[in-house]
Image (cartoon, rainbow, N blue to C red; front, side, top):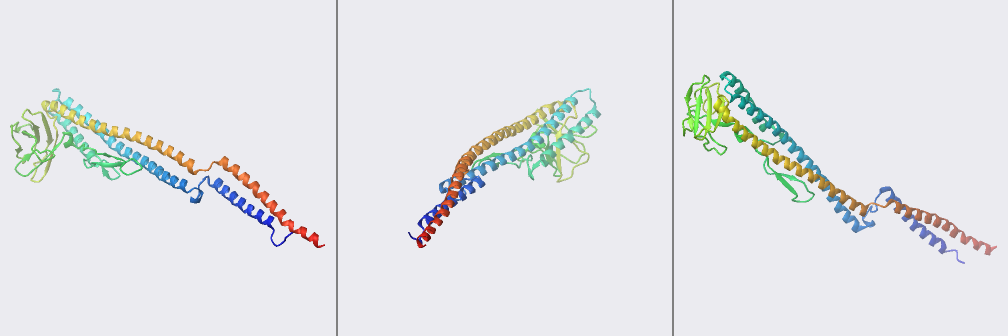
Length: 350
């Protein structure tokens, strides 16, 4: 018998250390809920899990992006909805003015409301914005909506202008001191006939085919009719003569039965343009709603896959912990027994 090296105690101590490490790892897994807490637990699994986590977070942010995109679209569509309502009211007034039961003073009152409604449409176009970005003035073009977790996963949206000029219910003239010239958005002449009326109804220049300019030094009604058959008229009441360098904005003219009748078609065309823009935005919104559902579904499935790799099976790990805990207690007891073995040597010395 040897007492300098207690091999039984050394073996029991080694096993106790192994059991202690196993119990500690089980406790870490049970307390964290993760099977992989460090690279040493599963190097390959950790690498795959981290890639999945990056993808999951990207998908969640893409879903949030799409929700923000829908908010922007809803802001635009809400403004277009109000523009629709204004145009419907303008059409209603045009239909009313086209009835000859109205006299001049009645049509003047109707015209005053139409002028204000036209100005409000332009104000909506100018002031509607989302996060300081103008939406309906024509500047919101080719904006990128990033709706994926990776590079290049995006769509583009452009929102057209809904100001009076685009809708065809207003146009502007720069007064140069010698006359007023009608121009389109590119600066080209748009009309063949211009008529100018004073408030009292006296005609100064009436339906002169081919005329592009008229003198602008007389207060009154300034009307542009485009085309030789006078199919469209734009109108504004002038309370004063316009000086050189001023901008004259002309709007829908319902001041007479004939012009009111023609304005109905003009407003119908504007309604069609707004409807087309709203339809486009609605299509984008529906698409984005499906995009969000898909992103959330993919993120959910990817999260489940990542969980199977990284999360601990609590029931299985609890069984392992119980086993290691029993072995730990057994090793402790055996170490105590092994430490008692050298005591038998004393019996030989008596």
